[in-house]
Length: 377
Image: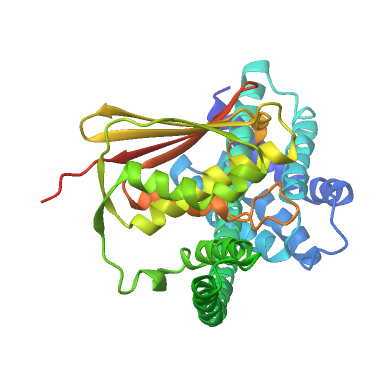
């Protein structure tokens, strides 16, 4: 007997067993209680059965067209039902197994049985592929749209928060500037007065913290212009500024500065980077009571157009799992830290076409800054 004749017989057989097959299938399927398409699931089973049965009477192109159409319709229902897709796949494969069990009753020769199984598998596999692919695409699109909405809302809030913070800090900075001015007048009129130097230093530190927030705002760049400045001179300024902290922490400073190099950019921002990194090192050494606390500042040229500044300390090693997060905003290991210091530093260095990286070993932790050098025009 030719297999074409066998297909005719199979079509007749499955049609005659339609009610029994569908009954067995409906009694075995899993339907979630929260599924709003309970009745549709039974109808979909009948539709799939109709398509599968006709596979013995139609060509592949026509069959695929109907399989895809039905699969896409059911996938849309699955998305709307918001039920685990695993339930759907399980139920479809149940139908496949039930057809196998009925197929075994026909008494086909092994070759014809294998060919029939291949056709049924082709039909079910294509149906599951089309349905699950569309379901996944639709779900991914929903997730993407939700993420876009969340990101947009979050960005709006961050923008508003940034505007409020910037406005607040500017208002806060105005009286601070006045206080600093009056302290300078007092120091001039009463040079022997105690504590004025401490007050002045604390105000400078407060101003430094405020600058960290302002550097996150583009508004801070309004009216600012880039300029040429000398690296070694800038480092000396920073060490003078941090001298009270260096003295208080009994920290030894080791400098190996190359021939002074010219940089081009925002000197106050690069100063901020050095202050932040060196102050962090002093703070860590003090917190952990490191023996012979030392900060090394080493500068050398990688090439005539690039200078490398390595700022290291002999404090505790930074755990490896934290290496990727120390430059992220709001990450901090300090009880009263803002988590903005290193994030701001990286932003500044990258804005100046440089790189900032960190390496930590048991004997030392080093922050390396690479910056392009400049030639004054």
